[in-house]
Length: 81
Image (cartoon, rainbow, N blue to C red; front, top):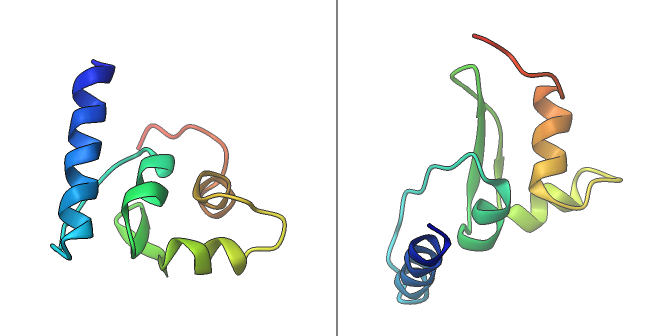
């Protein structure tokens, strides 16, 4: 599984370097931070924040990555709905 995931990520990086627009959806914030130049975090069907990954991280004191910002904005508990 990891080999195919890595192949896909490398392919997406090449497309992005060629200035190809990609709409990428993921629950993996690390991947989004790595691949995306603009991000929207959606919770319960609503955009709760959006922008460039670096700007989003820089605007939230004490948070160093998108995963921590996601958890801060959406809560840390699992939901069944």
